[in-house]
Image 1 (cartoon, rainbow, N blue to C red):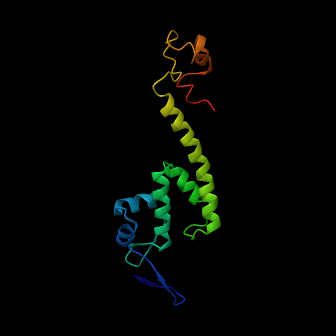
Image 2 (image 1 turned 60 degrees about the vertical axis):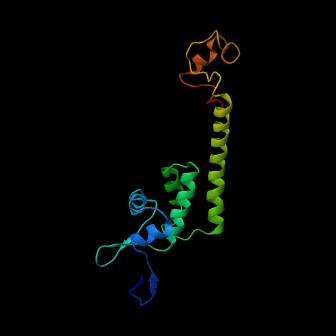
Length: 154
């Protein structure tokens, strides 16, 4: 679909259905992303949403980030640090991927620890002192607060 601007220039815009089809997400997801401030649209004379083609790239970034377990709020904040609807440059994508890489490395470290220690004591404060003389001698972890203290260690 072509849109003519006031200066007479043509600019490609996409309907919500086109965005959904081309991005591989349901229309409801497109609406959800927009409501969350992850993508944006304009309205035509008939009050129908119209999206710039760059929103397809934003949706691709959102989908990849979500698959990696990055929360939507983190995605919104990260994308929001750039001008709305701008085409991300290679340098900007590098900034984003470096930021997310550090977060993912930390998550991988925690998940690996959870996987490797899940079948042993996790310092939950269950008072099984007789069973945890090596992991939590004299319930020292209980003094540091409630919860799974061993898994939360740095």
